[in-house]
Length: 138
Length: 138
DNA sequence: TGTTTGTCAACAATCTTTGTTATTTACTAT
DNA sequence: ATAGTAAATAACAAAGATTGTTGACAAACA
Ligand SMILES: [Mn+2]
Ligand SMILES: [Mn+2]
Ligand SMILES: [Zn+2]
Ligand SMILES: [Zn+2]
Image 1 (cartoon, protein in one colour):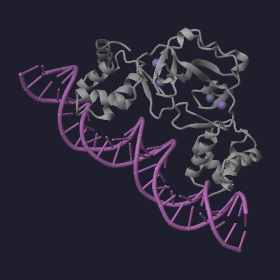
Image 2: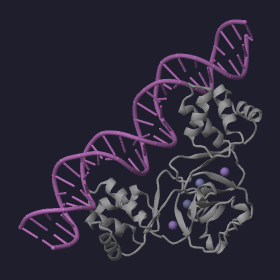
Image 3: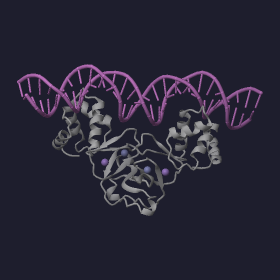
Image 4: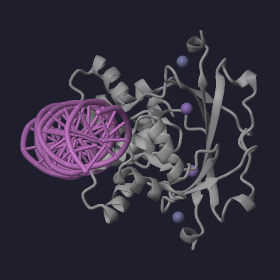
């Protein structure tokens, strides 16, 4: 995800207005590696702006997803997780505490051999590793 | 997933009763490669039993998941998908029509090198390939 | 400063999944 | 076969996540 200044520029160029609510959400997402849910971002935003609505959070997140600044991920935890790391990467999830860690690996996922692709034109591959993290492994 | 006869035995051994509703759901799942949602299974079941309830479908599916006979998968399509193929396998999803195909490949996903595992004891890896299927690719 | 146009908060609605309960059913032991 | 019992069912309500609606409001820009 780009910096708050660059996002401000991008939004304005797209005919979108910059509001304190959006700037607040930009800041919360900046360098956030926790893969927060919309609700978690909402809670963080409320610490600064007690009147912000959950709808506004969803709206801003969806706009960031649309322009490719963040990723919307579903790991089956009940709610979408949002990720400011929009480079191609994979994930490592602790099945006990639920924490989600980034796995920045380029060549871990091989191309799908065309004889297995069933005619699909494959454009993306995501890998999810699941296991127990150090802290949960006692 | 096992045969209807074997599932009947398994359920009885687990103190569960065999009802026409459950047998109907067993049959619908048998050899089903479409990764149906609970709603899709409900619709199929209603063709045979017009009074079956969605709750019964969910309950039976959850029981089958608990005993490991089927898998519950979340691809971010809005609803869980159920899969009678309970062997370790991966998936290929068409981003246009949404169909989900099995990818039965053992050694496509390499072990995660321990220096990248961040201390996790990894037990599972799922790969999801996304692309456009033949029919949608015109 | 005024005008325009997008955004906000509040609330309702939708969708998927689970909880509750009274009734019915499947199994078991007579 | 019959009756007893524990579990499953259908119907309905509720919960949790996300989206739709709308009138008041505020940001952008001249
Ligand atoms: Mn990530
Ligand atoms: Mn499958
Ligand atoms: Zn953990
Ligand atoms: Zn397709």
